Every structure is written in structure tokens, then in C-alpha cells.
Image (cartoon, rainbow, N blue to C red):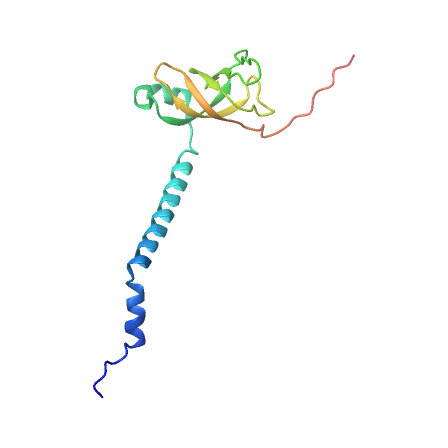
Length: 149
């Protein structure tokens, strides 16, 4: 018998695993998985918010950066325009305040003194351009007191 011998099953499976097309597909799949994991960590890292005082203390470093800021809506500062116009209001932490410009749908419980978390871009000129607005629900509800009439 002088013929060539057939490759063993182990050699054939190893050759399939080293196929350049298969390696390229595996690399693309791994890159996509890595990208998804990276984005998941980026969005979860943004779940922490800073107070207005913390933001203003770091204003130079935060210019143009995306950040979440928490505080209360300062009473009397909500300015609503026509439908489609941005809403302007001021968020305060009791010590410092920051004007916010928001274009989007307002939550039902958005009002003066509401606890809010705004997410967007801070500008060193002191304004905050929000693209997300969350209101915190009151932790407890109290019954209205009856007044004798």
C-alpha cells in the first residue's frame, strides 16, 4: 500500500478550528460581546448622581461632560413655553442652584419642590442641558387634614 493515508478525525477537527473564516467570525462575536459589556458598565456607572454643590465645586473639570445631578425643583422657577419648547427650571440642593433646560415629556409629578434627577451635559457657563428627567416618588403619602368649616 503506497497510497496516502486519510487524516485522522482529530487532525480534521483541528483543521476546521484553525479555519481563518471561523477565527474571523469568532473575533467579531467576541468584539460585539466586549462592546455590549463595556456599554453596560458605562450606563450603570451613570446611575450615581452628584448634588448641585458637588457639580459646581468641580465645574471646570465637568464642562461638556455628561452627568446626573440630583436635587429639588426650586419653587417658582418652572417656565413652560409652547408645546415643543424647552422647559426651564432651577434645581437646588438647599445651598447651591443650577438652571436646567429640558426638552422632553414631563413626568406627572413634576412640580415645585419635587425631588428630581436630571441627566445631561453640564456647561461651565452654569447651565445644564438635560435630556432625561426623573422625579422621585414620595416615600409616603399622608392623608389630607380636614378643616372644620
